[in-house]
Length: 252
Image (tube, rainbow, N blue to C red; front, side):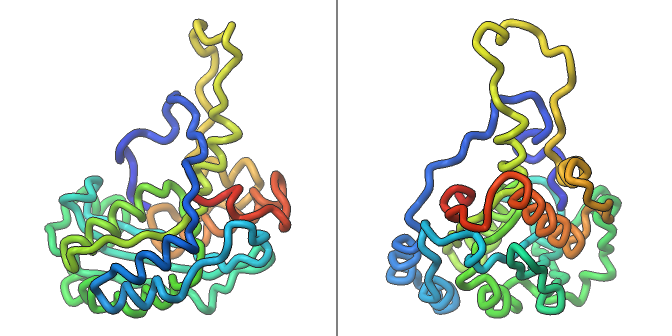
């Protein structure tokens, strides 16, 4: 997941990430199905979405990670996407998929250094539109699991806007935001004038996994980052939530 410095450093001592207002996703999907011009997006929305009160144990989940040419969704492109279906008690690795993609913008040397995807590897890779049917069919009906929701949402929206003139909406459970709820709480009002005496707890993917005793994986690789995010959510739910927790308590 290539997102160092995008929008802001997620480990910086900023105000806590409060849960965002929650849409009625089931109703929203029906509205988007009626308004989408592209047939592929329309089929995706017509698959529907689970109700907000659905227990987490019954929610179809799909971990996703994207690797990109840079940090700015409006001008950079996607070079790799991985998706991995899961439930709270299992990760269905055999049903996962990773794609290398040829972006429509140049890829700088810094990106190659970070995620290890070379110009030669993507030279003959398909465009996002070539795999869009497969990607959307895998996403259909699933709540996405990501670490830093702005990455997947902004980059997919930007890519589809350039190609189709439409964007895509999907509910996500953001494992970074769940960590922020715990570790970015504001101090009591009488302590807010004091300078922090310790560095803020990191809510990056690797550091978050370490707190739950999860193993280290290779960073900035779409497949392993998706797997790492899936395992992190399972640990978060096991430690702080319940299989009966409604999905609306976690998704945005």
